[in-house]
Amino acid sequence: MFRKNEGHRQQDMFGRENFGLPEAKYKKALKSKEYRFYEEVFNRIDEEMFEPLFVSGRGRPNAPLNSMLAALILRELRHCTYEELFRSLDFDVLTRMAIGLTDMSETPFCPATLFNFQDRLVRYDREHGTNLFEELFHSITGNLLKRFGVDASIQRCDSFRAMSNIANYGRVRLLVEVLLRLYRILKAGDRKKVDSILEPYTSQSSDNYVYRMNPADLPRELTQLSEIYIRLFQLLGKTYAEDSVYQTFRRVMFEQFEICADGSVRVRKVKEIGSGSLQSPDDPEATFNAKSGKKQKGYKVNIAETATPGNELNLINDVSVQPNNVHDGTMLADRMDVIKEHTPELNEMHTDGGYGGSVLDPKMSEHEVLHVETGSKMGKARVNMIYESTDDGYQVSCPLQTSPAGRTRKRWKADFNNEVCGGCSHREQCPTVQRRRKRTLYFEESWAKASIRSRNIERIPEERRKLRANVEATVDEFTGCFNHKGKLRVRGLARSTMQILAAALAINFGRVFRFRIKEDLPSTPRPNQQHDRPIPSPMPLTALLGTLRAFATMIQAKKRLEPIYPYHINNAALGCA
Image 1 (tube, rainbow, N blue to C red):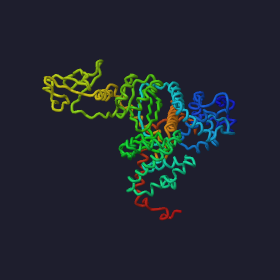
Image 2: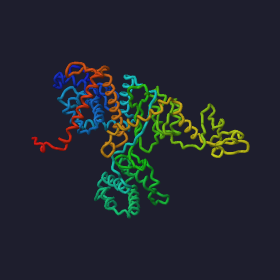
Image 3: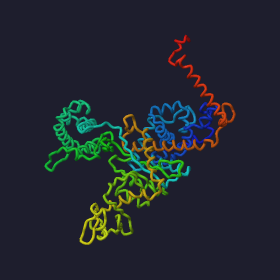
C-alpha cells in the first residue's frame, strides 16, 4: 500500500535533540553538504509519481520512497558501495540527515528492501514503457532550472560508452554457457533425455571447458554445437517456449547458426553475426561496438546540458542510455522531443561532428533548433561549393557564380554558365560535368545538408563557437559510475539507465552546492579572526626598500663566512651535540 513519508517535515522532530548533538555542532551540520542535499534533492522528490508501483488500499505500507531514492542518488554522489552506504546510514549523523531520517534509533529500510524497490522500477519500465526514475530526474532538474534562473536556450551534447558488468565471452564459451543454463531449468525427465547429449559440458563450467580446448579444434567444436542446438530445439521447444532461459537459447541458436532449406545446419561466419547479437546471458540487451580498435560490450550514454554564456550555473538537463551500436545522431534525434518538452526555449544545440546525419537534420528543423557542429567530418573539397537552402530546394555557389538547383529522378543538379566557367582557374579540379552548353553539378541531398550544417558555426558570434568543449569535463564526472575495470556496476539497460540518471542528479547537486557556497562568500575581505583586528595594509615603498637592503647585507655577510664554515660541515664535525 502506498504511503507518503511526511514525518521529516515536522520541525520539532528534526531538532538537534534527536541526533544528540550540542548546539555548536548542530549549527555546523545545518551548513554541511548533506543538509544541502536534504534541501535540494530529498525535499524535491515527489513520491506520488511512484504510487503506481504499489497496490492501493490494502497491504503493508511501503518503506519511505523519498529516503530510498535519495539514498541511491547519495551513493552516486559519494561513489560508494551498498555496504558503505548502509554503514553510513547506521552510524553517520550527516548521512541520516541527508535522507530525512530524524533520529539515530532506526533505519526504515534494509538492503533487501532497497533492491526490491529497484526491481519494481525495472519491471514497471519493461511492462509499461515508462521510466519513473527518469521522470524524477526531469522533475528535480526542472525545479532547479527554474529556481536558479538557468537559461537553457543554448545546450551542448556529447556521448560516451558505458561497458556492462559482464564477462568477456568468446563464441564457444557463450554457446556452452547458454547450454548449461538451459540444462539447469530442465525437469528431471527432460534432463535424462539430454544427459547423453550434454555430458561433455555439464561436468564443468564453460570457462574450464574452453580453457582445455585446443584452438585447432574450434571449427569441429562449432559444428558439434550446432547439431546439439538443433536437437535440443526440436526436443524442448514445445515444453519450454515461454521460459526466458529457453528464449535466450533460441535467440543464440538463430544468431550463431543458419538452418538451410534442406534441413541442414550451417555455422555462420563472424561477419554475418551482427553487433546486436547476445554478448552475455546475464545482460541480453548489451551490444558490441569497436572504437579506435577497442572492443566494448554494453551501452552508450548521451547527455545534454545547458551552455548559455551568461549562465553562472549550468545543469545536465537530459540523459539517454541506449545500446552502444546506435549512432550518436540517432540517439539525439530520439531525445529531441523530450528535450524540447522540458526546455522549450532551446534554439541552439552544439555537438561534435559525429552527430550529423540524415536522421537528426529533420528533427532539428522540426523544432527550429540551430545545429552547431564542431569538427565536421566532411572531407575538404577541391573546389569550395557552397550550398544554401531556398524555398524551392537549394542553390549552389562556386567561387565565380551561383545557380539554383533542381531535383532529378534520383538526385539534385545545378547548371552553371559555361562561358563563366571557361575563365575559371579551378576548372581542372571542378566537380561539375561538361555538357554541350553548360556545366552541371550533380549532388545528393545529404551532401547539401551536411555542407549547410558544417557552416552553421560561422553564423554565430566568435565567443559561442567553442561552447561544446566543456561538455567533455561533464563526461569525466560520470567516471564514478564505473568500477576499477571501467565497467558499470550493474547489468541491463533499465538498471544502467537508473544508475546513470542517479549520477546525473548527483552531478547537478554538486554544481548547485558549489554555486550556493560561492553566493554565500562575502564580497569584502573578512577581518583577521585570530587577533580580532583588520588585515594589515600593504607595506609602504620606503619600508620595502629598507627591508631589501637589509636582506642584501645579510647575504653578503654570509658569503664572507663560507670559507671558514662551509655548508657541508655537519654538526658532529663542529663538536655540536
